Length: 113
Length: 112
Image (cartoon, rainbow over all chains, first blue to last red; front, side, top):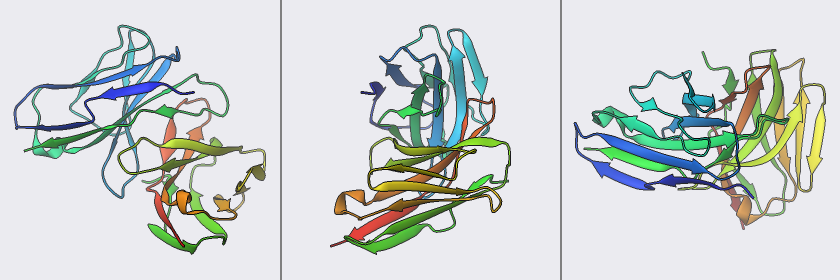
């Protein structure tokens, strides 16, 4: 069974605050991903990592940053939150094997006021 | 430039009938296609996939069909059940990229 966790599940925060969204997985997967999704829209890849100390920007430009110091942990940080950052953030992991299935966490719903 | 498109934002089907969700893509370098199901306030969960070298894959009530010449795939759910009501995302894996490209999703509602 897939075990991938995200905290917090919901966050309402004021403009200018620094926030970190947590993501952890217990499957030992090398590959981890962050997606951003707005209602009725596709999931947009904003960051990914193929292993410890490896991070890359995704297809959608994002002001957030990520780190991968441990295999199981892939946090996302916004240094200064803005209303335009309001969205759902989904973390996923994969073993990179066919059929390339990604396991998703429950997501963090972020609202910046 | 959206490479994976789900042109129907919503679909309503009667319980027991067949649900057909459609997906079109533009990039011929996709080598795997996946369908995900998403309930509100949860992350997407994997349903079924198909390799680009196949034209059909079946798993219980779920069947995915791939038409490479038309760059089109579809997910069939038979029979549809109330628990199938969710948003369904089509995703494609770019050959060698280890990344998925998602469509916008189709909200399926199963009516009793």
